[in-house]
Length: 336
Image 1 (cartoon, rainbow, N blue to C red):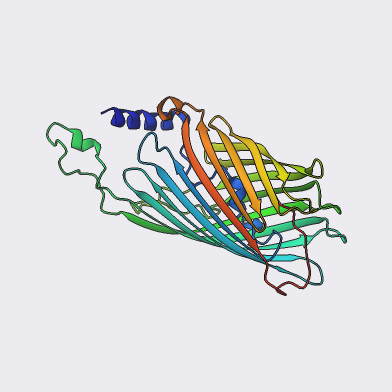
Image 2: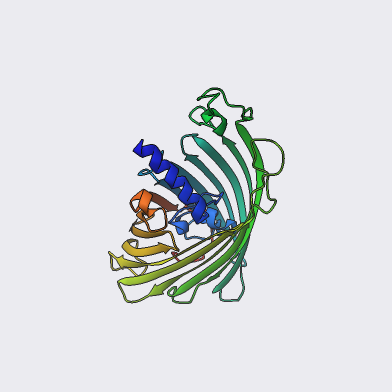
């Protein structure tokens, strides 16, 4: 009985706080580059990048929400102009609640990055992503309003539940700007992206009235060199979708574990804050071409009385690899 009461209060709090976002999101937004901006495809060091993210949320309240995301992208350098061409694939699976509501998304991204000056310090990039999504729901464990009536105690519902699957195509686009100084220190990046440009219909009633709002994502970040062993990585992201918005801000302190100029081994520590929602504690490790990061969200919103401040853990893995002789030229991309 207590568990069901907590679930009821949980969803009441959700409606009060306006958390009705339709898209998946990660606290480590910088570790899911194609989810942040399609123009991020291909802008990294070496030749290819593999990413995996996993998040579990609200385990203390109800059936946990689980999100898995993976992406891979590859870059090609124009040997004459040092421009970059990137191609990436993106996939995610999001499973929520007693209904096992599952959304599966696939995307194909392409990007172009061109230097704005003769010294290749300023890069402007643009990208698009074409996506296909499917969703399904299991009505078995759901109880509808008419099943609470005296004349129909938990009997068959009269709700229209004939459809339990849907699918739609999607389109997203974005721009990025990157500054790479001659010393490769104190770099800067910023970007803007619009997701669901075509406002696809997402409805189990096949009536065309339930459309996904366009989502605007703005981000900025920097690599600030403090000393021979310490670097700061401040980051910011703002998302707006319909009447809902999200702001995440914070900074890493990276401690180099070797004495090389471009250290391949390092540990990161840093606090992050999702505005009016959660404090995020993150740690990350760079081990040559592999990076591991783990965070835990401490809920601080109106849901904290129900969630007991417990948000959920999140894990991300990034691998950046090189293919011998794949690119004849080298374009240095900062680590963000």
